Amino acid sequence: MSEAVYTLRHHDSGGCWMSIQQKQPEQGNRLLAALAYPIWIIGLIIVLTDMKKDPFMRLHGWTSLFWGIAWVILYIVIAVLAPFTGWFLVGTGRLVYLVLSIYYAVQTYQGKSFTIPVVSDWAKKYAV
Image (cartoon, rainbow, N blue to C red; front, side, top):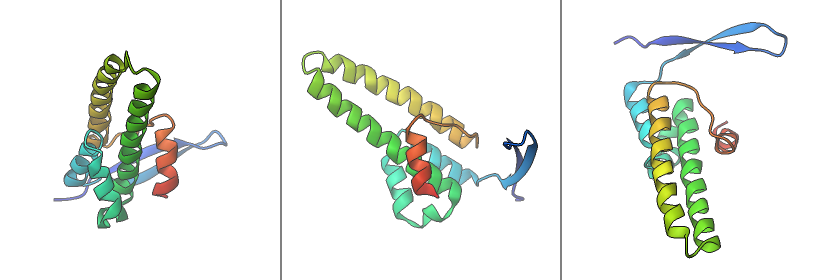
């Protein structure tokens, strides 16, 4: 089976468009990276094993790991600040987490680029 090649168009600061060709990640890698968003422990496995040698896997491993950590911190803050109404907020938060995680998983599996505010910035620092 031949490897697919896709072209990214990047706008540089001088107003010109540059084309960058990259190989489409293998289907198995895309699936594993996608599953790391709703199941963030997979992201931890990616960054702790040899899978991190692949730049695609390393980026999504760190992004999904920080995504999960951010939600755990949010849950703790809600539980501390709103002990009586926190159950409703945590329940709603879980639903939002699940919906967004599935969205990011689909984007990852399709090989599309996306940014999660704050989380992607943290992940890119570690994925370099």
